[in-house]
Length: 86
Image 1 (cartoon, rainbow, N blue to C red):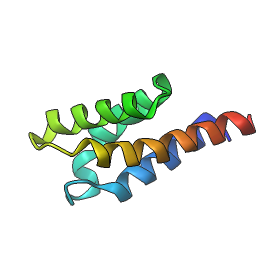
Image 2: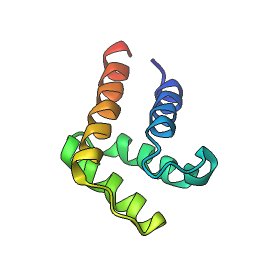
Image 3: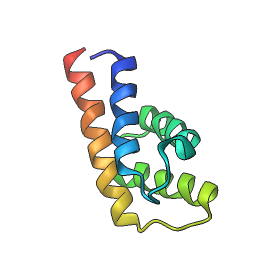
Image 4: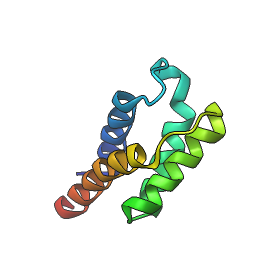
């Protein structure tokens, strides 16, 4: 899987997650920031903390870390799938 395909799939996962049930177009900036962190981080807890921080900064609402951990596992599974295929 190419990096661009991994990014597209990660965006779809995050759009479906939509933690605050806002329109997809309203959290594009956060999705881009999370995908960037996905390229840097490899540990679910680290990625989850960044996801929580990114969304809290933008929406001024707190997401329970457990929900962020769940999505971080999905994203990291996608990342490792992409690495194994390359």
